[in-house]
Amino acid sequence: MLKCGGRGAPPKAGHFSVTSSFLLHLNTCCSTFPSTAVLTQCNVSSCINLKSLTYPSNMGSRRKDSFLWGKASTKVCTVERQEVDTIKYHKRDLLDDIQKLRLEIDSVMTELHSIETDEENKNVLRNKKFLCGKKKFNMDPKKGIQYLVEHDLLEWTPVAVAEFLYKEEGLNKTAIGNFLGEREKMYLETLKAFVDLHEFSNLNLVQALRQFLWSFRLPGEAQKIDRMMEAFAARYCDCNAGVFQSTDTCYILSFAIIMLNTSLHNPNVKEKPTLERFFKMNRGINNGGDLPNDLLMKLYESIRNEPFKIPEDDGNDLTHTFFNPDREGWLLKMGGRVKTWKRRWFILTDSCLYYFEYTTDQDPIGIIPLENLCVRELTDSTKQHCLEIYSPKGQKVKACKTENRGRVVEGKHQSYRMSASSAEERDDWIGSIRASITKDPFYDLVAVRKRKVLSNSNGSHH
Image (cartoon, rainbow, N blue to C red):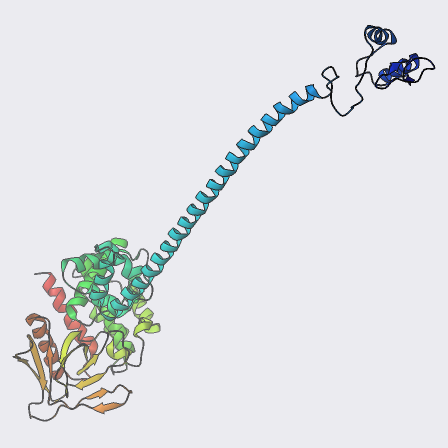
C-alpha cells in the first residue's frame, strides 16, 4: 500500500511513503515482466532509506532526476529516420530515372514508328513507280525500261533486264518480243541472257519451241526473227548436245516447224502440208544428211495435234492475222483532217497495213488495204525520213478507221504519209510494203518462210 505521512497521522501535502505491501506488489510485477530490471525489497528499501522519494504537487512537469522513460528509443528512432530519409532520397532518384527512361522509350518508339511509316510509304511509292514502269513498258518497251532504270527500280545490265522480261508478271508479250528483237549490243546481250534463262534439257524441239514462243510474241520482221531463232538454236544445242550436228540444223528445222504450224492452223492457207511434204522440206539439212523420219514424224504429229499457243495478251479475233506479220514497228503518221503527226504502231500483214495507238491494243484504229496502191520515198519540210502510200490513179485511198465511239468510218486520205526514225528504217518499210502489194494474198505462207530459211541458211555458209 502506498500511504501518505506517518502512521495514523494525516498525510503531508506533497509527500509519499512506501510500505512493505507496496514493495511486495512491485516484486510481483517484476517477476511477471522479467524483461524489466528486478527490484528486490532490500535494494528498494535501501534506496528509500537513503532518501525518500518526493514529488512536487505539480505532476505535469518532469523532474531532472526522473526515470526519463523512452530516451533510448528516441535515439533508435533518429537512426531509423535517417535511413528512411536516405531510402526516400534514393526512391526519388529512381522515380526520376524511371520517368526519364519512359520518356526515352516513348521517344524511341515514336522514332521507330516514324521509320516504319517512312519505309511503308517508300515501299508504296516504289510499288506505284514499278507498276507505272510496267505500264510504260507495255506501251513502249524502250521507254518503260528507261523509266525503271532512271528510278533505280531496274539495273541496266543484260542479266537484270532479261530476268525482268522473263520473270515479271503482267508484261505484254508483244512488247517483250519487240524489245528483244533490237540489234544494238545491249539488246543482243539481253536476248542471249533471256534465252539462257530457258531450260531445254531433255525436251524435243517442239516442246522447247512451245516454251520459248510462249515467253514472248515473235516479232514480224525477218531480221528480228533471224536473231531470235539463232539464239534459240544455240541454247537448245547447248542443253541437248548430240541431237543435231550443228546449230544450223536446229535453226532450219525450227523454222520448218513454225512454218508447219502456220500452214496447218492458218485458215488462209488452203493447201495443208502432208507428212511426206514435211519430210521433203527438211532433206539434207543435217550437214547434208537427212534427219531420222521417226524424229520428223513425232514433230509433225505434235504440231498437227496441238498448235503453238499464242500468249493471251495478244489473243483476239485478229490473232492469226497478226501472228508473224511481214513487218511491224513505230511510225509517225500525219492526220487526215488535222495535219499533225502522231505516233502509231503499224503492222504489215496479208497485203494490209494496220495501225494502233499502242502495241497492247487489240483492235486497230485504222486499216489500209494495199491493193492497187503504191509506196514511195517523200521529202517533207516538217519531218525527215518520210514515205507515202498513194493511189497511182490519183484517187482517194480506200481505207477505214475507228472513231472514238467505236464506229468504223471510211478514211478521207488522198494519201498516207509516215515518218520513220531513220533513212534505213524508212527504206525497209518501203521494201516490205512493195513486197506485200505485189504478193498474192493467197500465197502459201509456208513457201514464203521456206525461201527465207533457205536464204538465211545459204548466207550463213558464206
